[in-house]
Image (tube, rainbow, N blue to C red; front, top):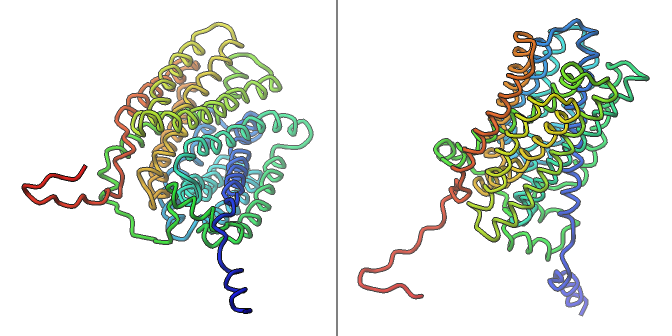
Length: 446
């Protein structure tokens, strides 16, 4: 009798509603990217003080901005591979602890060489954060939610960046810029401890996930497997959808990094705003990006359901990026400082429409290799981000004008829109199962 009772008690209650552990996972990843952008954007607002204190030129400042990005880009594929091979639990804990240390170390720089070296190490350490999040979502989320959740993820980063701009302005009134970096570097440690203690790479191993939630994830397209297959590099390199996606992301993120690096300086020097005004106005593009990436992800989910993945995932970028290019042109040529700031903010939001669908496409193309695929795309995006601050800094130094450097952003947005036309989420690394051969002379059923 006792054994019968125990057997009944140990049987999972399939009639129970699914637990909601997947939403805790989403919350933790949103906080992760928020902390990342808090640390990443801090240097843009502090740049005038750093430049003055360390005696740097615009070209040197541009190289320092790009030091982070080039290292981040080059280590994206290894970071994505690490997450695929060893799991996002270990990968993200390592990433956050590393970047927190490098954020604090930024405040110890004494000149161009030391600041450049610290930013290189910062980029190396943070690489793989987004690919690891893609790996998390591939396992923990139903396929139909990925576009909007990636939109929320990137929105969290943009909102954190927007809050960072005026926050740094306020902090600089009371403490030196070096201490701001030390303060921000302390934030990530608590997140890393929480993540390590709570998260599990496989939802089936998590005590807070019941059988109903496990089965729901399997039924709705989550890759809840424990395989660590070798990466099909040949298929990856030959995949036409991934090649187009990488080039698209290069063009889109080229513009993104203008807002993360030079925007406050542009408002101060080209448009005559004071530091306080520039801090608030520089937050507008990041707020616009937050709205744009969320709307783009949500639209791509809705349109993919109605029109299919190929048309639905592409539409937000094909529409938004050309409009962003037009807004950049208007912002550069207008005589009004306020109109310029507003048009540049609008351009950021419109370009953001095409960003979050790209991450959903990475998961769809990559499957269990989502970390490597998304790392490859993000590597190209951050190569574009590396070029952006350098080209703009050299252009301003050489021509003493912001017009031509900023028009390169519009050109890159148009290029990205064209690349979206060649993206097909159905061109996956893992081919569909072979259809059984039909004997000659017979007619297939149905």
